[in-house]
Length: 286
Image 1 (tube, rainbow, N blue to C red):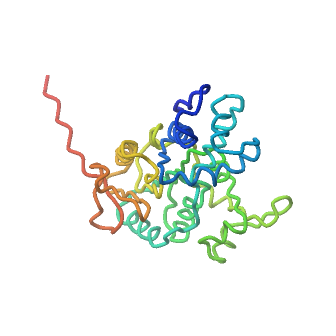
Image 2: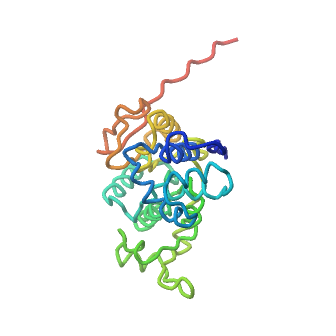
């Protein structure tokens, strides 16, 4: 996996804390921290400021640039990422995608959840397909964050997380209540985790998982990328979809004006399909 370059150490803060942390976030993840999101800096980094006795964000940025505490960069990126997720977020979308796959997939379906955070989305898909019967899909779930992927693999959720979007019936059917040090948490049953491959990957700097997919979920991820990175990602996503496959974006996201690799689906409202690629010319006979 290729890691982008880190923010250089040494020197001074040229344009304030926002410029330093924005450059760090973009270098590590490809995400853009525009001035309209500057409010996140102090909210997210306040605990780190207290930990390092920094009175201001500029002081924390200077500490980062000094190189004396290399762990600051990793922690800052983690807290600045938006890991918001829940089970069955927009349940109608899940049902529509399941219908689309049932109508077009040949053999065992393959799904990719890009930006899966702590795993609620791929687990929701596994529940839905198991309840519908038929072939269980192969689900590949990726995220930039190592801690998020580790939590997703463990399949453990606290009481607040388990109740967000999950009915009591599904909670009892698909999760076991933890005991001991984790009493009060809920752990996904092995058969629910089995069809999911959790991997660390970066949408901007890494290629897509091997093979092609019947559906790709990439919800509320692209809106954090600058336009050039967004176009790059959409081109890669289009290449990773099977003919007839669908792309699922967040409710506030669109491909219109962003990429010519996709078009709105004529079959499923709110979903997108890759634009058919022209046939490559046949080589002349030698």
